[in-house]
Image (cartoon, rainbow, N blue to C red):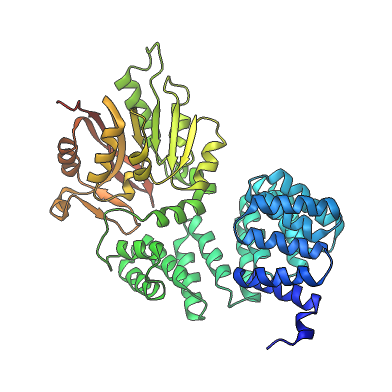
Amino acid sequence: MPTPTTIADPARLARRTREMIDAGRLHAARPLLAALSNITTPSPEIDELRGLLLLREDRPREALAELDAAIGRNPDATGLRICRADARMRLNDFAGAAADAAEAVILSPRSAQAKALLGVILIELGQVGDAVTCLTEAVAAEPLRPAFHQGLAEAQERSGDVAGAAATLAAAVGLLPRHIPLRTAAIMLTMRQRDFAAAATLAATARREGAADACVFGLLGHALSSMGRHDEAQDAYADALKLAPEDPYVRHLVRAGGLLPGEDRAPAEYLQTVFNGYAERFERHLVGLGYRIPGLMRAALVERLHLETATAPTGPVLDLGCGTGLVGVVLSDLPLRPLVGVDISSGMLEQARAKNIYAALHAADIETFLSETDQKWPVVLAADVLIYFGALDRLFSLVRPAMQPRGLFLFSLEELDGSAEAAGGWRLGHQGRYAHTEAYVRDLAAASGFHLLELKQETVRYEAGAPVPGLLVTLERLADNA
């Protein structure tokens, strides 16, 4: 039990408060901070702890207000500058965050934390060369801080130095072999380069050396599956499921491996995890795979709506699962507006927002958005979105009442060979995406109050040099009395 001397020791109490905040034990940290405030005079350290606690409680606006006042009283306090930079980042004020972090570096030139924070902010601002410099210095000053290595590797990858990023992570793993997030970052780097053999090797090494969690096993399964080694992938997925039986990301990959009964759609949490981590590289990846759907949709819309001779715009247009806005880009010169996008990934929406094409962007699951919208849309698009849904009947039942009579619903699917029709007309593939048969789409369209205008077999993109067969579908919403 603490002695009165211990309780009255401000330095020890401040240290303990910081430890509780760092550990996420916020209910314990708050009374400690109150006690500290009662036994000592106001100070920059107490202000910083108050700001840190508010940030950990996900109250960045309140933290910013507290920190503004604190910095007004103590403008040369490095810790306050670092804390306010964090608050500004959370509020997407990256320019303000960079100014605070730069000031912290000026005030404390030897502070590795300030340099690392400035580097991370510069990544967000697209100044990756300067970010590499800052993070390199931070790593050199404090080589046992894993977050510094991860930040440096990200900056190097963003600058195009993939080999440098791999070397940074390899060195970090050598210094901190038990730190699993470093292993995960190294595996993810190779996965983004589609070097699945290297990813599998890194994951297998992590498993052998006892530095693997459910995520590592899941990535191992994904890498093996991507190389066609599905039996081995199932073993990896089974190990992932043992470690994280309730994790929606893991469970979806395990279902893709055939070890759990299939669900009729990918979980929202899975989609958020995948696409938030994928947003920065999404377009480069798809373009490299010869992605064709946006262009095919454009051609279909021009033909169906006679857009080349249109004298007035058609709209509003709803882009379901808009991602980074690739469909918006190819439609931007056509009389289709306003364009409204919906996506579950905030990271993808940031990329779409930067294009200044969409009149509005909504962060939501598309089924939730459709069930809540009051708008009647004349055109609804879904480019490579329904590949994350198996059974499409609920989605169709939500799209139809959200459309104007005779409105167009255009979407793409990956095609499943007709021999799978007995299994329900759809199937979850090894890569976590669903494929559908042509017959399933035809029957469901008719049963859901749509007229099938066109169903074309198309190549969606190429994977491992082979075409991915798909379907481009154009439906017309029938009137209620039809």
